[in-house]
Length: 142
Image 1 (cartoon, rainbow, N blue to C red):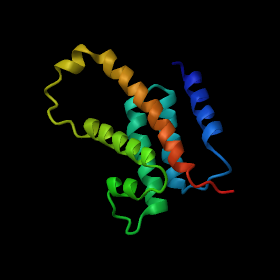
Image 2 (cartoon, rainbow, N blue to C red):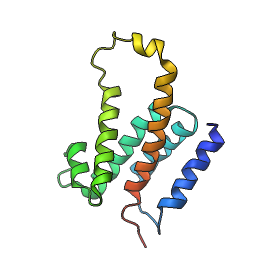
Image 3 (cartoon, one colour):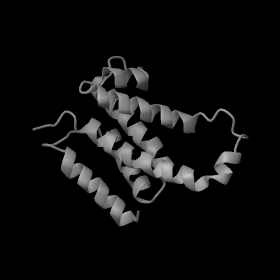
Image 4 (cartoon, rainbow, N blue to C red):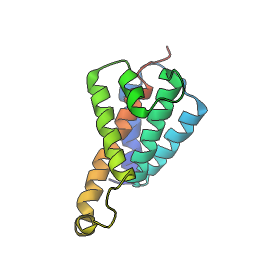
């Protein structure tokens, strides 16, 4: 997918999912912008990591009680469908598998199958962009 196609994908998600308006803390807006820039430029792992950060920032702003909850707890507190919560937990676990690599020297598979990992990262990045928008647009300001 070319950068222009990626921007069009994000715009289509906004058109599909945004019903009304949304008010976000500036921290969240800035992180979302960085996630989108990473996605459009094909930095899929960076996009995923930053997207999860944006989701956590939003959930912390909207649903945190103490400001110290873990992401897993913030996701569990999210109102809405269990499908969304399950998808967010899957994304969180996927992100964790990249952030907390258990055995970095066990790298033969990624060396031999780089294109498989890149395709998977692109697919997950596309999904994470959609999940981000589902979360931040879940409480529209009308």
